[in-house]
Image (cartoon, rainbow, N blue to C red; front, side, top):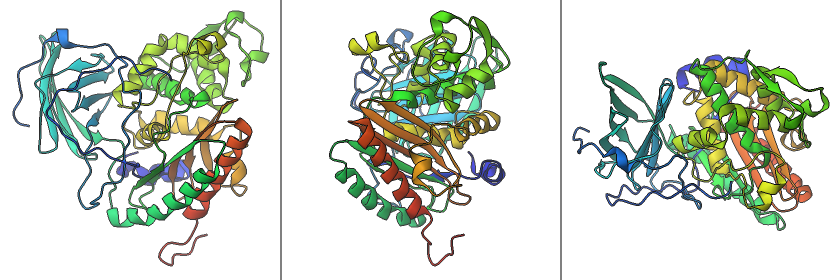
Length: 451
């Protein structure tokens, strides 16, 4: 949510928070690094325009990801080798190490395109590529919260210049001094993670309210467990992105047949089919009940795994992939699995909150669905009754997660608590992490009195 929106949305949603990640690569190397295949498991001067034949397939990613971290000199804004430009209706992603870009907007998706002539200097990536007869000339700083530009030059139409905010993971704090007040929380969470001997755990926290200077912290933020139902957040965002583009309406209906029914969590499995179900109800049930039928129907409706993975790739979220449907045990046995990380989750949650990937109306609808969540044995159970949260759980026999927003007015925060290992002990670890964050947030700062 942009700063200009925060006051309005704070009263509407009851809160928001932002925080920096564990380790930030500041490299702006000029060497070309080859683009890999799909992730497995879950300025002024422009060089020559790249050959379209250099284009690679969508969905590439580094299966190990890049470990981000706190910049050692907070007064200097951190840079990242992967940045994306947010503009109305789309994104333009840049990988300055791999020398690749991707344009994804309402009108088209170029896929991941190589630009071997990308120029990287003074923390800015610039260049041009041609895809399908359309030229994309870009100048994108590698520093989050900066302004970048993109010129789209198509056949038989005037050039369009797009400007927008640059998004990195993490975004640099807006106030490093205030942000430093969040650092002690890292030590507290590290102790909880260390105590969880049966459950490898990771947590990322981002202040969205400005109270801590929009700082982000993490402990094992690059941990990459099975995503479980947390992956449903990306399915929802891709659907709402199409709504924002005017390509679909939530009033549209989808025919659900008996063949679509699966078990596990959800409510649709108990209804009579075939029947037409609106996209609005599918989207709501996807989050409110973590409905597996809704998830699988929406995956099909959106065109399979590729569009959701294209969304993930366009935001440079390297640890996340949608590779199987819900409750598809045969796919799981073949090694096809959904994965994510705390850093990627908070990257998504932050982009949603800041209005960088969805319109304010779709953002508010998504957070509203998350506030209706009926599976409340983790974050809500760890907090005092009545604390406003919007969240999404994820459960498997070997994974337990809860992610979302603490909507405490004036202290809004995005959180991602992910664990691997036995679900029962993972649940308790999530609750301990959730309570640790809450207790820190409600502790008076500089003598202020918390109500």
